[in-house]
Length: 84
Image (tube, rainbow, N blue to C red; front, top):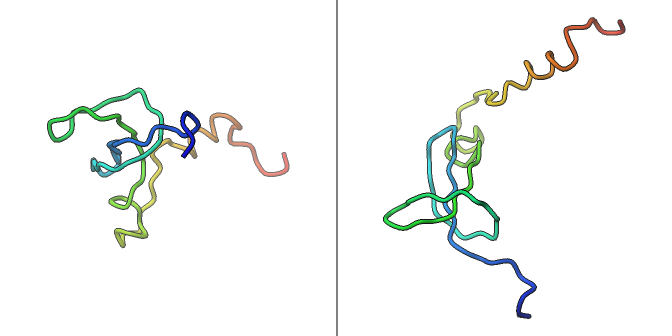
């Protein structure tokens, strides 16, 4: 491997916000957040969906609208009738 051209591959904690689930893995993702996990400090990446909360893996068919996408759309474009 050439020196200086590859990103740093390190231990990172991913936090699934919807299921409040944290797991440690290795990644090259860049983040400024850190977390104390199992007695050590690691970089932290916050995600909305992981295998602990995704309907395909959990078997639960739920609609996740964490950002209020419908409300944001209506606020931006209004409640106009089609073709008006």
